[in-house]
Image (cartoon, rainbow, N blue to C red; front, side, top):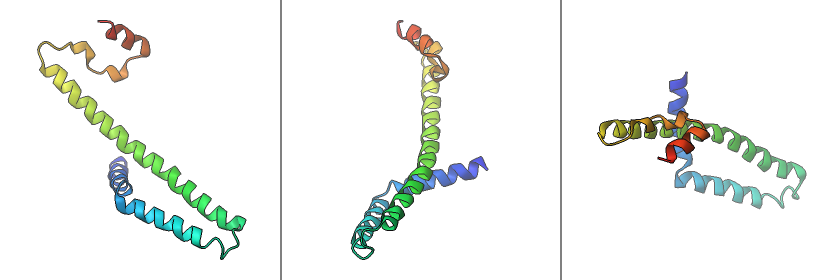
Length: 110
């Protein structure tokens, strides 16, 4: 289940980040604006765009957060590997993302 969600999240994030998605979203807004006079700028006309954008935004936030978490974890693993590979590097800097704010301040003072 997690692997399926990860694959879907990465594909949707890539799709949403494309110029075609922006053009599609802009087209929907333009069509909505053009239909305003037809529906006399009614409350229902406004509710359609508000509900649609809210739902899409709500779902996209979770998908983008998932891809950000995966990317962040990959970067941390790569950096940790580089620290371990260097003989002069301080190995106590590995896994800093799990440290508290106080521990980070102490390690930063060295």
